[in-house]
Image (cartoon, rainbow, N blue to C red):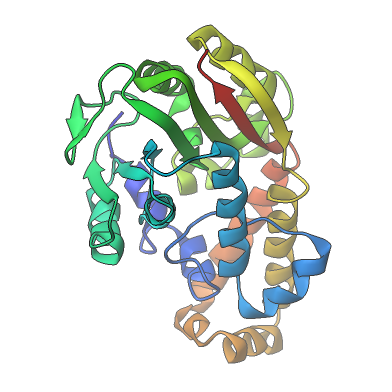
Length: 298
């Protein structure tokens, strides 16, 4: 897998949704967030609180201990890797994007137990940033909201690589968007103009049942298969629709700019493109689920 295209999904210049959500809190993290009714009032402060909650949930599934050797695959700007290092893990953040790794090093490169390297999670190097990635060399592998970029063959390769580098008794936590039905090709009709797929640089999402089957074929034992759709992807999609409706009027856009000054940079053309993108995402989201897989290597 190469970085051609995938890196553009996380650049505001090529992803209009980043221009919308960055002033609302996307920065160190770019994920949907984890929402519960009692926490919804925190939305007035933006999205970062909910994004950190999703990280909390995902990392808790790893059940790490100090000294564990952990690969944070597709680490982005490094927040999750730094969290692992802060609790005593020997954490390596790996990402295909040189730009993302550069930002990760700037933000967290001086933190103990934390290192970053450019690399392909579907074809791991033998070592990176002083960390061995040989057979059985790791205790844990973590991948949060990134494997949908890999494509079907890439996901198979990633599962095989994760299984290879984990020791017996090691664990992979893989959290990802998944497809509701057995036929992921249905996205062609729902995303006819490719606004969703071209924005995030992917072709199809893995059906949950097939994800589990692929993990088992790679040698993993599924410990937990958690459906987080109602806590992650559904509320985030509703949030996008709500923002689009508010922004449909000049008064609504003025109110949003008053609360989040960074939105003043958006042009009328930007708002139009955002509205079209959110409509397309809403259409696709009705057939999208969100799954956390906890996979142990026997």
